Image (cartoon, rainbow, N blue to C red; front, side, top):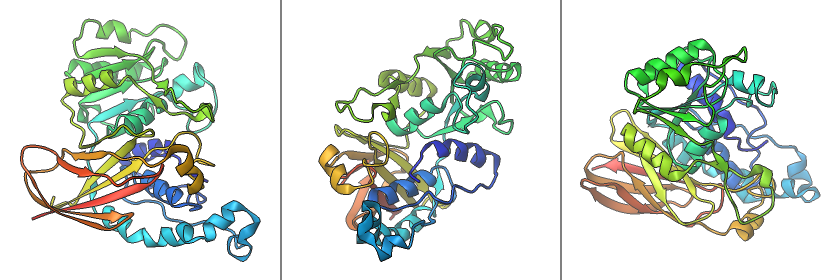
Length: 362
């Protein structure tokens, strides 16, 4: 009953296969505007739709004072906000997602053999790297594992291999990718064992290749607040990720420059005729959703408002009319782009808050 980005990992695998999917039917419980925004944002990731089912109890309306969740839901910024934001999300979803040039190749085998050995569908090595790239490093990323035979590795400029255990078929695919010149990052002990426990020859086959780089595992972010440390987000070394992107010649379609903590993440879409570009920017939040983005008064007291500068790189030169669609509607006028990113000063935002911008070619 929360915005769960980990589901986007499964969405990515389905999207790449052209497989329709449904999501849990209790996801969208808009007890606050941040819950509503974050749910729509996460479920739209690389998808052709976002999730907009509302779930509530009649208790929410008949006796709103019985529980703070019910009371919040009955306020205008609960249900009413979800209704009012629908048009902005419908406009945003007109565009097609920019196809990621980066792939995280994880391992279900590794998690089941050498990891926590849980059958839970999120129990896949590579998840933390995937989350870190999208949430903290602002890199559009696809996900795959040994079961994704439909994923064509040659489509990607950069692959990050995660998980100690990989089968021989995966070893052959990864070695082939590297031999064809793709940039490959081996995360921590990735690819060192086969499912039977014996040593893999993956690294021996890759030895000496200048396009193969070893990087450390993602680490929990060191936050100043002590609460909910088990839910703190992960990140890779930022300089190391930037160097990998540079070597692979991958440019972020957009990026938010900020000193705010929590920071921001961003998604871009464009219409088939490239006449409109849509940008959704969400401020992250630390910890679990409950008591962090469920009640806006607490959210503001804990983390305050964050600001930043949005830089849109994936935009042709020319004049662009810029309008903000969510939350506040603003006409930012016509901006002339010439050999550089289009820059927008973001409005101050709470954790989980989304801002949607529409750019129209003139």
